[in-house]
Length: 195
Image: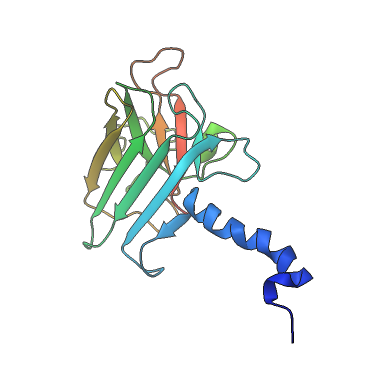
């Protein structure tokens, strides 16, 4: 009679690796709903320091505003042709705070500037973009995320376009108001939207 699989040395060695898969998915995997071609994608993640051993999906650069362990859920809906609706829900953030949130071109990294500039539907040929013909709420996806007294909040933005594939990689939360030790435009946190 053969030994049960769990009793074999190989199975015992692989068991810890198998346990990591559900943990990775619950701690911030970028997981589209349905198939890879699904028009609705969902990212759920806890904010971690940029220096975490495993590169996090959600990075906090200002743990006084976005504490480590705070949580976000981002739903991006592209089910209507030529339209994008993005909803960001957060828990555990600084209470009674307003965060300007923008779609960015780069991915999150240890350096807050890794996320690059704001994603623009019509790209300003002059960077950094300050021309109001390009830097505006119709050409950029912008949210005003306000937290309540418990540090919870939800914001939704809708734009009449869909980002070009591979060019809108992150959602950046700026420090906002009240500013405290941070300038309003400082990058307080970043969430990866694409792998």
